[in-house]
Length: 482
Image (cartoon, rainbow, N blue to C red; front, side):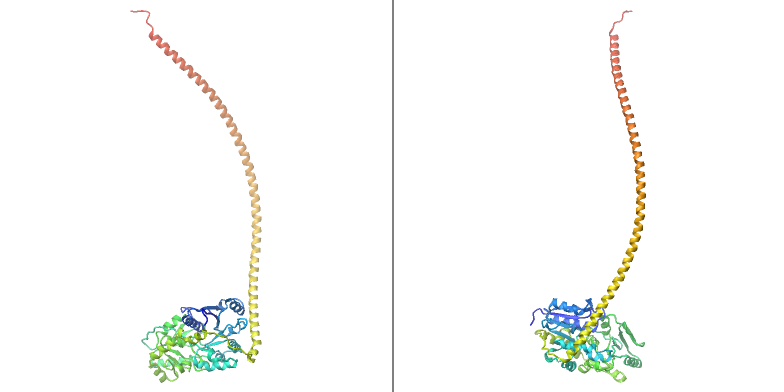
């Protein structure tokens, strides 16, 4: 057992919160991570998201793995497995691939030149363990694994069902159904939807809530059909919780026969039974929870409306599909992960040249993108250079104007300085003349002050003599008497 196991997870898009739209791959990875962290709390999850990477994705993966040195690698997209370094370069680090969707069946309805099957076969060859969503898919994956030369299937094919999140529900007052989601090329729900609307009209009862992605639309309208925009998983589940039944109106197809649908898990997580127009995994394994219904038969549809969901079976299913309970086989394998024995295989050798071609094309596209970015940068820089040259020209013209103004200012300054110098000289001469006049006045004033002081002294003596004379006259006796 690996203590503090480090699990590197390669995925393409960010894990969005429920307040935003979530893809099936997003929900699947979120549930796997919750389950692993619940069962192995000491494990460390190392996320590598392609959406965060600029440049060559393969080179980034190699550099990251060389730096992080994980104990196990989990690939959520099959096309990434072939981009991994060799077993020798990774020192035999085990690789797990998630095979929850029957991609080979989906290609029957897509314009595929063989890329999907190519990536799938190389992913099966390069991996050491495989997450399979349901036991009814075992034969499908067993055949493909045998085709590519994989043995040890009993210990390396790990049953890891889709998980669900339980939510409280409120029964509606009138018959209410919910369906929708992205319509893939192998799905065509419109005929069954119109037939169901006719049945509701005949009964004069019921309405259908239908969720549609922003890039897809419902090809018709109906007063009982309410189309909702695909805004967030949270809003989607809140509507499901207030309905009676979930709808899967896609007709039978080889893909539907093997697929486990995320919308089914959302319905059952919100305590709603499913009415399905196709024989999928759940209609065969849980017919009381997901009922197969012929929507061209009104009597059958009305009978399905009147069948209550078995609560005990629902609770048991919900408990089994909680995130911590779907990863049991995976956790058991992670206790002692190992690389499988790989032998030369003609089919794998035949796939290698095409894989090199794919990688060369990816490298060429990357270089073309870099050239496009460089050309865009060059044009931007040329524009900036032209603007800079124009600014330099404008700056030069402004500089000439400033220089002329400075010369004029200098000449004016010189004139002012010369005039100011003459004025200062005149003022200095005037001050000197005034100083001379002041000195003369001060000298004259000093002379007059001295004369005044002499006169004061003379006056004081005369007053003194006069005083003595008066006293003498007063003291004399008269010369005659009467």
